[in-house]
Structure formats: structure tokens, C-alpha cells
Length: 291
Image (cartoon, helix red, strand yellow):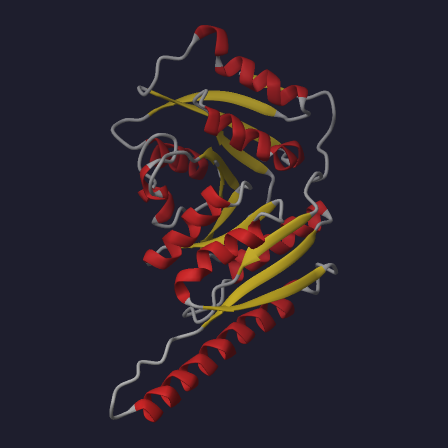
């Protein structure tokens, strides 16, 4: 089923301020994430801010080596601050040629405080763009969880590293009639209107769809918002919902996957009612998540 909007392909509009997180000290800078954020800011004519952390390591004092331990901590903190400066300087080099309205923020803090600080910043931006590395540690997962459930705004996870230039031409939307899926689609409307093609995918063998709230009606809702949309169903075939949607996005050559995140404890346990290990393990396409 395909429903075409009455208007043509519009520019990304509705977002004015974007935030991109650039982790310091990584093996390689988050170039794919920075490039994606720059393209999004350019398409939306939005202001873009890059943020990084210079972590403060506490000195461990002993009775015999107070001075030595203090010097070690000070040296390490200088190295961490220099790493943050480097990644932000790299962000400037990569982004300023295409985004004129750009600035950087460096936050100096203890490691446990980073999540709340990122949340405090994220609440002042329309979308938070973050790298989605395949080898994330607990700290990175905690940051993703904090942003998704603490900011009140969507998170956009970009595969890192990646050499592909993801755009916004074709988008897959996961639809299951849930509050989270509805919120994600509504939050993503600026991109959905801009896309040349939006594929709404319903994963079967999971729910009994209410006949009066069918995917056809959801597709019509998007069409009334100027979205060029088509609707299809995909069988789980023993996979998780997120894995099925990721596979379909790859098959269609999609630039973005839009899904809802919900739950009560940890992010990895409740995207679309199932596990998010497929997303957090480093989905090969950008993922737009809303809660």
C-alpha cells in the first residue's frame, strides 16, 4: 500500500538547535557522527553545537606518596583535557566548512556526573546526535540511556565508524500502535516530510492489530503531513523486532530507522517491547529513538 502526499519533497524544517556528542579519547574521532550532524544541521538550517567531556580523575593519596599521587592525577587530567580539546578542534575542522552557525562546549567533570550534564544540555536542543559504536562500554550505554530517558527529546544514533554518507532520502518507520512508536514518528516528522520515500513497517507475529487502528490509518496520518509513505508487513521469523526492522532497513537501502523506546529500567531491555542489543551492538544504519 502506498500513499502519496499532495505536496512535494520539503526541506527539513521544525528543528532549530541540534547537539552532537563527540567523545574524547576514542581510538578514532567520531567522523561519521559529526558528518551526519553537519548534514542534518545544513538541511534544517539549524544551529549545531558539539559537546565533549574533559574528565577529572581524583587523586588517590597515601601516607607515603601524597605529592607523587597528586602529580600523577594532575598529569592525567591534563591529558584528558587535551583529548577533549583535540576532538572539538577536529569537529570544527569537519563541520565549519558547511555549517556557519556552529559552536563547541567542553565540560570538565567527574565521570559519574557526565550523564546528568549531557541530559541538562540535551534538554535545550531539538535532537541529540550520538555515535553508536560497535564496541560500546558500560559508560557509553549509560550515556545513551540518560539522553533518551532524561532529555525529553529524541536521540539519533549514528553507526561509528562508517564510511557511508547517510542522508535522509529513504526512511523506515517501525509501527506497532504503541505510544512510543507514535511519539517517535511525531518527533521525526521534519525528516519524514523531507524524505523522498518513507516505508512504514509492521512486524507481525507479535501483536493482534486492532482493526480500527490499522497501519493504513497511520500511513494516512503521515500522508496528511506531506509524507510520501508506503506500508508493509514483515514476519519476525524468530528474530527480535529491532533485528527485523534493522534487516528491513538494510534491504531497502534506508538512510534512517525510526523506532520508539520505552521501559522502566535500562535502555537495552525495552526498545519496541524487546531487547535493544541489536541497536546498541552498533546498528549499521542511523537510528532515531524517542521515548
